[in-house]
Length: 186
Image (cartoon, rainbow, N blue to C red; front, side, top):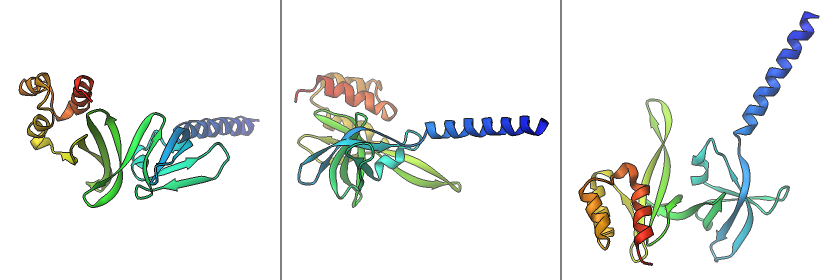
C-alpha cells in the first residue's frame, strides 16, 4: 500500500514537471515572412520565449498547424514578423544576421544579439544599430553614444536638449528613439 502511494506521488510530480517544462518551450505564433523577391508568406512563426536568441539566427515558418515547416536564415529572406515583433536581415560586420526592430520611424533602432563566452559560460550580448531613412546602418557605440545620436537627431531641438541634460543615455536608448520617432516628420 505504501509503495502505491509513493508511486502515485512520483507520477504526479513527474506530470507536473513535464507540464511546467512544456509551458516555456517554443510555440508557433501568427506572423509572416518576406522573401527576397518581395512576396509575403503569411502563417505562423516559431518562437521560444525562454530563448529569444533563436529568433536572431533563423525563422521557422509554417502556413498553418500541421503543415510543412520551412526554416529561413538571414541570407534567404528580407524580414519576418512573429507575434508582432519584426526581425530584419542586415549585414553586421560582414555577416548577414537578423536584427530585431525595437523602434520604427524616421530613425529605426535595431537590437542584435550574439552569444559570447564569459568565464566558461555562454552569455547573450546585445548591440544596438540605427538606420535613418536617408542614411546607412550604423552600430551605436556606448562610448560615442551622445555624439552619434546628436548627429542623427540634430533636427529635433528637444531631443538634443534632453541629451545635453543627460535625460537619455545608452541604457534608455529605446525610449529615446521612440520619443524622436513620435515627433519626427516622415
